[in-house]
Amino acid sequence: MALEKVPAAVQGVLQTLQTHGFEAVLVGGCVRDMLLSRPVHDYDIATNALPDEVVRLFDHTRDTGIKHGTVTILSDPICPVEVTTYRSEAGYSDKRHPDTVRFGATLFEDLSRRDFTVNAMAFTPSGRIVDPFGGQNDLLLKCIRAVGDSRERFREDSLRILRAVRFAAQLSFEVESTTRLAMTEASPGLSCVSKERIGQELTKIAKANWWQVIPLLADCKLLASLPDPLSGLQSDFDSLALVPDKSRENWRTLFSNADTQTFWLATWGTWLLFDNAPVHTVKKLFQELAIESRHAKPIGYIACAAKEELFNWPKSRWQESLFSNGQASVQIAARIRDGLILNQLVNYEALCTRYISEQPIWSRKDLAVTADDLIAYGLHGQKIGQAFKLLCQAVLSNKCKNTKTDLVDYLKKV
Ligand code: ATP
Ligand code: MG
Image (cartoon, rainbow, N blue to C red):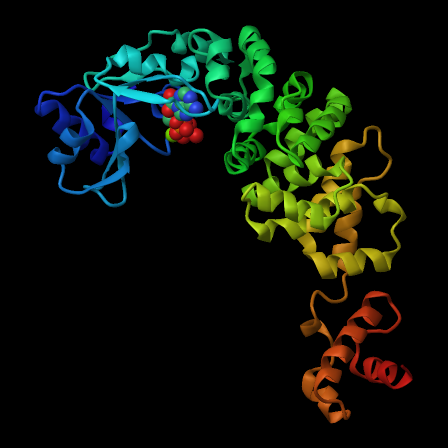
């Protein structure tokens, strides 16, 4: 691991703090990811300088959370750097935030307040790794282990329970057994975590190797403690855990090649598949989790469609589905079915591909008549829109061919 790989803006901040006689080290996720040779998306610096001392040393700063000791340095506008004063914390009466934060702590104390050993390491500008809790060894063991007394750590802050699952999914790690037991015991505390923060963690899990944490989520019954309606996800994961290992192994191939967006939609679709999740429930769920609502419609559709026996769908149903929901959503539903059903005789994705190749129209623009044609035929106002709708339905249900003569004849008939 070398400091030269760290962005110049980050090196600059470390150097400025040091030249002024302060300690400054990289901490947390960036050290973990650098040691794993994973891409680093944000660099956090910890220092013994107090927040107002940090503000005085740099021209452009933003007060990100001075109460908690964090100042953002904006010397390079495209690479903001967060600097946090070493701190220790005490009392967590809301099971989420410390009651008091004390500055003037040592690096060791600062690392002790962090959640997991792999997140509790520092990297000094001279290239030394400070690792008081065996984080490097846990990286080798591929293990998420709480720092210190795991029961205490989850009792202090319940969000750490979901963070453990998230890191297990992102890094393909296992949660160490004592930590896992402590998470299970502390899970009722999840009801104190805001839905927005839960949504952020679930989204990160959904974008990672979530299938690997299915047994964890099923065994520990963590999700049952989430506020309603999220607690319903527990039964989804219990059902997902019953899917044979071999079938679950398929998901890796099915989902890991898809682009992030598709992957994410598929994940949620699969999770919600086991719930009777109509679109409006999905919408409500997403609103509460502060997840973008534009995702709710496709996911609601995917979850419903993947539950059906697609093989029994008549051709017109495929075509209407492709028309109304778009190729990607229907393909994901088919893929999920392929992934969930073992020893299947049907390849749903191939079936879907066949219908895609035979799809007569994807939007009303593909009809062989234009608005001008309909006006010439004597229609006006709202009637034009109604006629387009009728003609699309007729073409999709194979009642009418997509040629101008056939379409006009059809209109005459109806
Ligand atoms: P990433 O940024 O990749 O999601 P990260 O490990 O950097 O992962 P952050 O949420 O950015 O996670 O937090 C930075 C660091 O702060 C963590 O590595 C950890 O040391 C500490 N930390 C964050 N949240 C908590 C928490 N709830 N309890 C204890 N320590 C925490
Ligand atoms: Mg981070």
